[in-house]
Length: 330
Image (cartoon, rainbow, N blue to C red; front, side):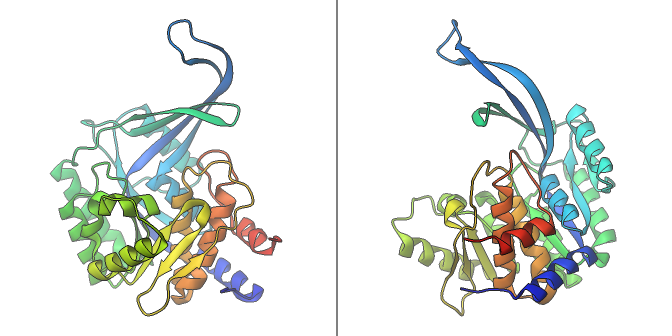
């Protein structure tokens, strides 16, 4: 199994604080309502939850940006929110964490995406999504592109967080990828299946297993079917590295000139998987920037995921926690 000597690992993690990453993507707010189930409703066969705590956390591209910030990097978050209380909460949280909000564009015609998770003790019972996933107004797309042209030269990498919430149209993706190529910047993408074909030629492409099945419109019959389909996609899209996450089975690395690399999960306990993909792509991008060693980067990202899923709700991970995960017995 691929490993990293402790001195090299510390050097890689230390390098994170010297990076500037642009995160372009769908910004969301995650709301958590927790309480106790005391009885079943007399109106319908559903539990009545007496809510006793509420928590708001950055979600989607904002969660990826926060992960990068906590890992030590400088971050420029670029995306759209509505002109509403959810946007105010997001902007306040970003400012509290000393993160720039100059790349957040407000659109009064659409709401900020809000995901409300309602649960009792540690069990999520239902999730409510309030959003508008129609394509973004063309004028705001132009404003976003103009902003990116100003900050692209100073960044080390562009991380695209595509949740299919309307921000990333075909035209905007195409224009942004051309801009990144013009400035010779690393592009890493955490996609949803609807826009897969728009990201041809990027260096790192990280779907999860279910998204890959959705793209193909079928359930993979076995491991061989999955690996064959994934490599076929990598070649078709001309992607340098395809990284497929598969929950408790860890992640798979497709590079074209080597056998498929499988990295088993290092999670000792799984409490909540929400936002874990954001943690993975953040750590993967930063670690890859060190010396373009995708196997070492994937190993670090895998450990970061193990830390994230052991936390309640959308969570971020520190370099110390990654180091502790590497040193933990398995």
